[in-house]
Image 1 (cartoon, one colour):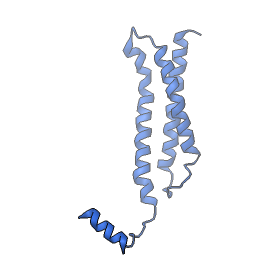
Image 2 (cartoon, one colour):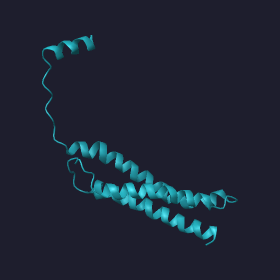
Image 3 (cartoon, rainbow, N blue to C red):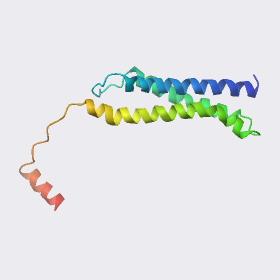
Image 4 (cartoon, rainbow, N blue to C red):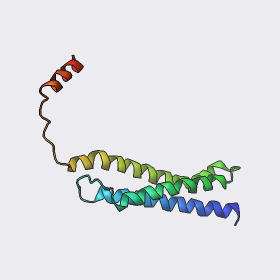
Length: 125
């Protein structure tokens, strides 16, 4: 297989893996809000695997690229880059805003008493 063919295949695989990562995160965004679970679920594991597989794919793409024409060689990475930006942005939103909104409110802790109260007063004075 020639370097140009390897480059073309690795570019398509990079697009596929980045879109898989985006779809996994989008399934959590467009689904109904659920309480944050201890177990991440299968979509999170598929997302992690696609991101880990994307790293060597991009390295192969960059290693086999024709750097005599750098803009033409880097152009196929625009779709994976955009998909990954959307995926990580959506993941941040789901983890920090949508997930926390679905969690039940916890009542404030009872104020400390005794030795703990004295220790807290020493720390904050």
